[in-house]
Length: 185
Length: 241
Image (tube, rainbow over all chains, first blue to last red; front, side, top):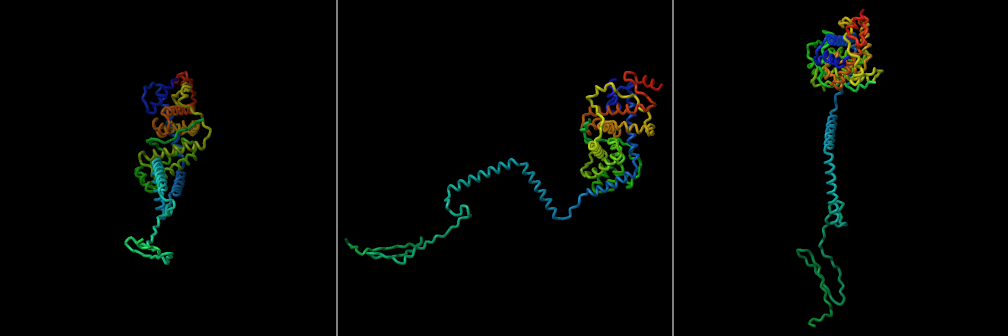
C-alpha cells in the first residue's frame, strides 16, 4: 500500500491537486466523496432534528442576554469631564511613557543646574543678611538726621555746637576753644 | 493525549452553502431578500430584528458545525447560543471584510474547541504526519457504504454508526473532518484557521477519513475488509461470496 499515492488521491478528491486515476484510484476517490456526503448529511440531519421551538427558546435567551449586556447610557453630564480627564491622563501617561528617558535626563540636568546656582549664590552672599531665605529683603530707610546734643561740658575752655544743613544732609560741628590759649604766642 | 494547540480563527473563509437552513424556512421578520451586509449594518445600528434575521438564517448551520465538533446536542446548543451572543457583542468590530457567516463560523469553532478543552474527556490518541510511515500499511479504502449515502442515511443504525465513528476521532481529527466535509474549506484555509501547517491538516484529514472508513465499512452487506496485500477487487468479490 502506497501512502503517498493515497495522499495524492485525497488531494485529488478534495480538488487540491489533479492526478491520473486508475480504476483503483477512482474507487478510492469515490469512496472519499461518499464518506464526505455521509458526514455532511449526518450533521445536517442532526441540525434538522432540533425542533424549531428549541431555537426559538434560544433566541429569547440571546435577546435577554443582549439586553443585560447592553451598556447603560451615560445620563449624568458630570461624567463627561471625568471621561475627558481620564482621556487626558491616559494621553499624558502615554506621552510620559514614550519620552521617559528624555524626561529623566532633563530632570536630572535641571536639578544639577539648580544645585550649582544655590551653591554659588550662598558663597557670595552675607549669611547674616535677612531675606536670604525669607523672601525679599526689606530696605530700611536710614535717617541722616544729626544727633541732637543737649549739653556739652567743656572743662578749661568753651565750646559751641553748630548744625549745618546742605544737600547731602545735616552735619553737626562742635567747636572747642581752650581758655589758656594765648593768641600770638 | 492530544494537544489541540490550534485555534479556529484566521483568514477569510468562504464556506460551502449547505442545506441546513431548511431552504425556505419562513422568517418571522420577512427579510429573506435582504443582504447579510445590510442586516449587519442595521444590527450594528441597534436593529434587533436585523440581528434576529441573521440568527434565523444561520442558527442551524452553526449548530451542525458545533455538534460535529462537540458531539453532544446540549453542548452544541450552548455553543451556538454563546456564539450569537458573542457575535452581537462584537458586531461593531465586524468590518465586513469577510461574510457574516465566515465570521460567525470562526466564533463557533473557537467556542466549540474551548468547550472541548474545558470539558475534556478521554480522547483517542492522534496520529500526525510523523506517524504516517508507521501507518503506511493502512491506506484508504475503495468503498464505504456502496455508493448511495443519501439512502444510507435513512437508516437509523447507520446514522448511529456514523455518530459513534465521529465520536471515536480525536478532537483535532474531528474538527478538520467537519471543517472539510461540512464547510468545504481548502487545506490552506484550514491550516490558517487552526494555526497549523498544511501538512498537519492533510495528515489529520487523512487519518480521520481512514478511521471513519474502517468504522463504517463493515456496514456494507457484511463486507469484510480485504487483507492489505490482496487486491481490493479480489477481496471484495471474495467477501461477497
